[in-house]
Image 1 (cartoon, rainbow, N blue to C red):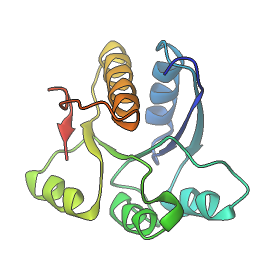
Image 2 (image 1 turned 90 degrees about the horizontal axis):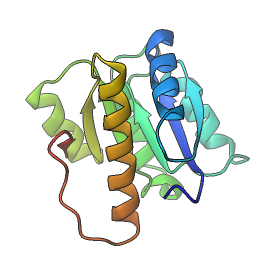
Image 3 (image 1 turned 45 degrees about the vertical axis):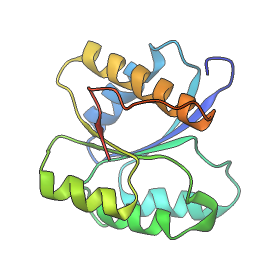
Image 4 (image 1 turned 90 degrees about the vertical axis):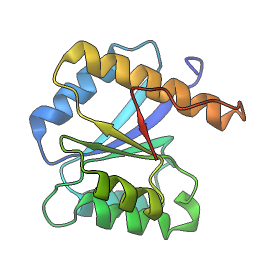
Length: 149
């Protein structure tokens, strides 16, 4: 996976969380580029533009203004061109009811935002490695640190 650049999209309204995520992503041994969005409307506009390459993974915060993560996930899964792109819910909250709802809606994984930078680096590395193995057709079990949906 480190041989190809992974295109990561992150939609999160908290600028500190976006910076934390981006910094952690830059320190893992996987080559990535990141596009950041402060809300779901901007993410969807970018995805619908058609001039950009498809992302390798989309990380979505649930609680965003204008268009939340639930609405974004619904719209992403309605687009044939993006139906297979992994969508990882990346949220500070965890409610079983929401996780079940998101699973039914087509989310790939649910990650609870960690509080430490090193935990986030570990989480992102394992998550992206796991997604790469799955996309390569390798039969993997979901790591314990992920709430797999």
